[in-house]
Length: 412
Image 1 (cartoon, one colour):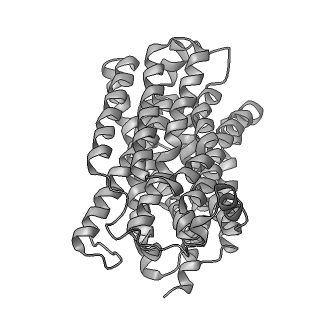
Image 2 (cartoon, helix red, strand yellow):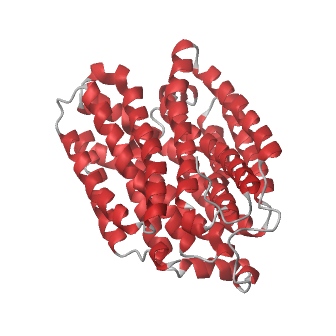
């Protein structure tokens, strides 16, 4: 691995990578919770008596809604206070919510604890972006951001595959306990290994005036930047396959649209989508860092994403064919990762976390909305009709990318 860094020495570069990778463990844990909502669907429905009371996708969206509620204060807090301390507190908050889910057996408190887990998880993605901005120049941030997001996607694979293995060999309760223990381990790693910034201060220097803005004015400044909206919506829409298929309705979609006998292959199909994202993210991030421009690949991947989704309208696909298609869908839609450095490059370094909080609202809020819209479309048009939402969303990202002003290409 090559450490492209802003002349603070190889030792500091390694320290920066350790901080990025360790902080990404909380992002891993955050995505893991989303994946477990799919893995434990039947267990949760039975334990919390969800059937007949609310749609399961509505229950799982509580986690994302909790994220969205906290995204704005999360960004403002991270731009003003120690990132490491915020990471520790947010992890403890998530653990409190997970412990609550373990202890309760009825729906009302389970919804509350799911929201609490979402509150803590809201800081995960924004915090790792802040760590990257402190240690790496923004023009070379595509690769470290992609590595961090890849580690997060690994959390999805972990929750989908390892969670399924534990569930099949033990119980949903055991999965919950293992999930809690994993969180405690991650908390210990954050305490020991994360460092906020290099000894000399952040690599990306604010103009000074922006850094002293009150929180309210900082957020208004971020809101008024159209690049944040374009890049945020681009990432959100291209992330819909993961949000809808992996984190919510994917297993039911496979069972209804294709053949019920494919249900045993479903975890592998879902994991293939995440695996494609993990391969494509660092590859595209590194490539755009080298190119000095992100927009061309963002445009290309939007079109390719639309095309790779078309074969799924053929309902006679085998399990192996679905695995291949889902892998390449993940590979291509991993271009969503490019939206994050676009946001970072389009804002003053003192506002990176605040800008990422707006992006995160669009990204995760879009995921919550997508899950609920998908459920509504299923009721109206069936699973295959609801699926149409995904290729249409991919096509919209092309027009969003077309209007993005690629700041990287204008920098030396």
